Length: 209
Length: 283
Image (cartoon, chains in turn cyan, purple):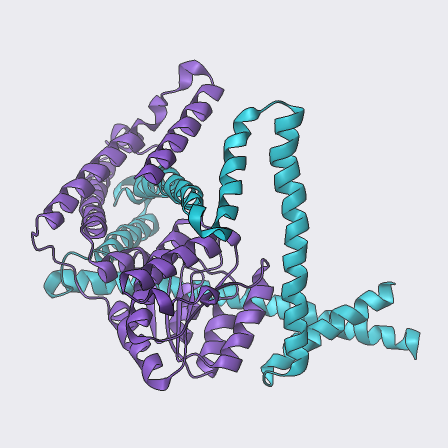
């Protein structure tokens, strides 16, 4: 059974890698099986983890009847199948979009904006030493110039344009660091796949042949 | 109107339910007063700017290259007789980037409706599917092209990240869309999508607020909207007073933030910043 598993995994890995050459029937087969399997798996997963565990069991078992409201909102989504009552699904969509905007306003303020403001208010000079002062200057200039870059109400010309240019330099340096970091992560994923093919799959040849 | 009223009532109902589920004495979180002050300033600024925009006062916004390219890119697809591919990110509808992506889709769908250009919108989540379909249909109706609306234009592809990517990549190589627009939340698939689109010879415009994915889009796409430019995009494209007011309100908040940071740095440099820094304590 384990052997079969390795061969199936190797087949799909190679089938997906074949896209590097060009689009082909083997890739297409893998793509459709992959998409179909995940769609089916998601149905089972949502039934078990959402409908049963988060809706049915707490409502019927623990009497949390307020969950009937999200349940009904979920049922409203099916109204899309009938044009006459399809407007009901808009209530569910509006609920999700409205609460998202409201919840994010406060969580972003508390999670990002306020802490970042606080951490940018660094002492320039004083007892912190030369290196800390240089770092503080870089952080303060970086944050302010980046904010200036994302200011849309004024054209990027003159001193303001110069500050925005400094901002874009900071942004690009940060992107460069992100790029390198992410590429390293991707290469390690590739190494993992190649290791599987060489060690597990080719290694299994000796068992079969 | 009734839809809005029901939605507001539901949100209020759940807010009260959550509040009373906790300690009744703790309904008002004084430790989050700073957030309330910001929300009030933010809301007042947005409301004022929205009012001015509605009154027809000219509100200046500088140009963003990537947004101006959207219409040209759809025009190119029309000339070539090939479809426009629009990916509204791969995250759920409860993410603000997805909402921005779906909102921009509305404007793009209006342009495709105007030019009779085929549109393809692959999505990963059922709720995004419903929202995207609603938005595209509305755009076609508003452009007087209700008959041209194709329900299959918005397609649920797969619920898994890389199954979704494999499918969209396959679509790009087979149908060769002239224009690919990626707007929303993207993760590890960003380069896989953008690189395949590049290989297929499509013009590509991307926008995301994920800093770790932006470098890949910048490398592989013709135009990229970075961070807040994505959120600004819908206001730019729609020119609706509500959206413009929001954008101008955000700019106003940025000025306040810069002023507060400068005050904080001066106070910290003179070692008298403790109380002032306490005002920004996040709990």
